[in-house]
View (cartoon, rainbow, N blue to C red):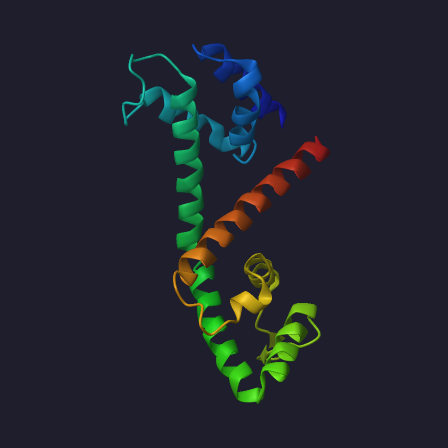
Length: 186
C-alpha cells in the first residue's frame, strides 16, 4: 500500500466502532489497495454522507458500512471504465467472426481443434489491416474461459456477461499491478 493508502487505512480503523484486527484487517486492505490515492477522498466522502443509510446510527462507522461503500465505489469506477471501453462487446463480435472463420477453414473436428490450438499458442493469427485482431486483453479473457470452451459454437448462453465479468477481473488486476508499481517507485 502507498503511504496515502496506509494513512487512509489508519483513519478508517480508528473510526470503526466494531473493528477486529484478526477478522477485518485483510479485507479492509484488500478493498483499499485497488483505489488510487487521489480517489480515496471520494470514498471517504461517500462513507461519511451515508446516502444509502447503511449505518444504524448516523456518524458511526462500522465494518459493514465501510465494506458496502468500498465495494460500491470499486464497482462504480469499473462500470465507468467499462462504459468508456466496449471491450466485451468487441470481443463478442470477434468471437462470432472467428467462429465463422474456423468453421469455413476446417472440414473436421481435428482441423478445428488444430486451429484453436494455433490461436492458443499464438502461432496462428487472424489478421485485419495487417494486425492480429486479438490483443493481450482478448487473450487474457479467452484464457479465463479456456480456448476450446470459448470457441465452442454451442456455448452461447450468458457468454457476453461472462466476458464482461472477466474484463472486470482484468481491470481490477491491472489497477492492483499499477498500485504495486507505484509502491515500488515510492
